Image 1: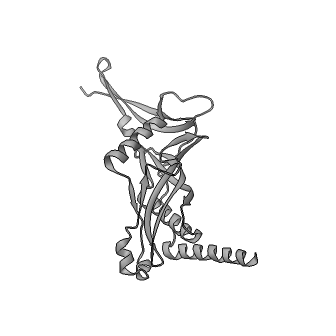
Image 2: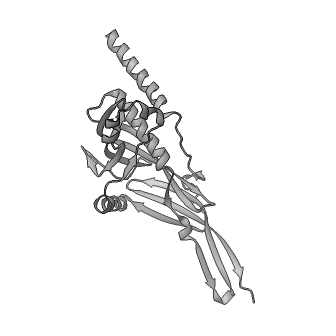
Image 3: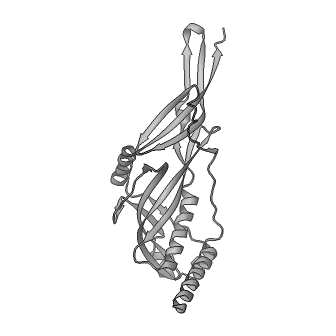
Length: 245
């Protein structure tokens, strides 16, 4: 029993040290602007419109991506120190890529609005050169999505936070490394990503009878997750200009 605990502790320590050695400090990028808050309990401000998105929208979107464009892929980065200990045969045979699958096991990749959160179940597969061996892996996971609004760029951004990753038939030490690689790849190559360019929803309305133009840009965005739907509340800032002459 004591030996089992000792081996477990050594395995965890090796996994942590190897992760730090190979990955270094994570180079994550924060979300631009401010995190989206829930709508005001006293009611929406004047000049607010609601955009509602349901899960079926993302089912159709992802279905089109998988069938028409192919599975999305992320290149798993490698640093120079790691390449020195990898034989050339392994460097050439491993593509060092994680690929998102439409489904795997009992998990179907998608976007779900539940429990007040945006949840993304994931199915994936890939390969990676670890300690001189090409590790083929597949598994499932769950991610949550945080949203923010950058008023200067008139854009709602998102960031994917990977959680609860499970790999099939892979040792705990390798699992620790692969999960770290996947999280780093997402942080460096995917996050943050554009969710909604609200600049496309800005207004410019000529008012002929008044001899001017009314303009409106989004000044605040709030969000509310209900079961099966996401609601975005866009509050506009109105201005007006008189036509010269």
